[in-house]
Image 1 (cartoon, one colour):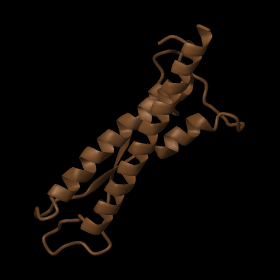
Image 2: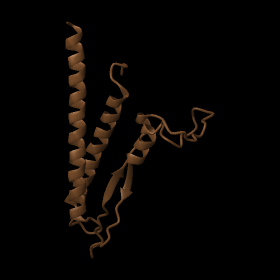
Image 3: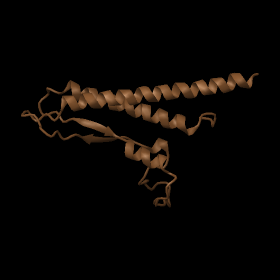
Image 4: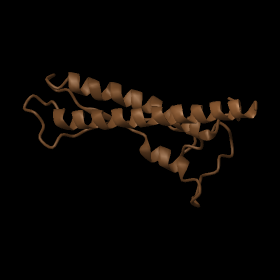
Amino acid sequence: MSELFSSSFKIIEKVLDFCQLRHNLLTANIANAETPNYKAYDLSFKQQLKQILDRTQPQINPVRTDPKHMSLTAQTIEDVKPTFVQISSPIPGLDGNTVDIDYQMSQLAENTMQYQVLVQTMIKKFAELRTAINEGRR
């Protein structure tokens, strides 16, 4: 991708992808609310994303002396990977199911709002580019 688009486009794109994955996971949890022994999962990526965005703070990064060495921290937005976390229910069902339907629905609503805000942000960024292109012609 050229440098026409700022790094914020890459960040928004990555977070939108995560929101979509999380939406699918949350809806699977809700769909399996009555399935015996079903374990609810969630998706975590905010801590890794925060590390990438907080590059202004001094931090100690391990040095890779060989390209084959595994990186211990995400270096770029492309390196951020979601982590699947099993949710433990405060009151597990008698059938072993750990889905708390109220919690899952609230998380789904929150995830949907985050997705909508990100889409609106992306629309505004494209509108700014369109304005710059149209005004540049004059």
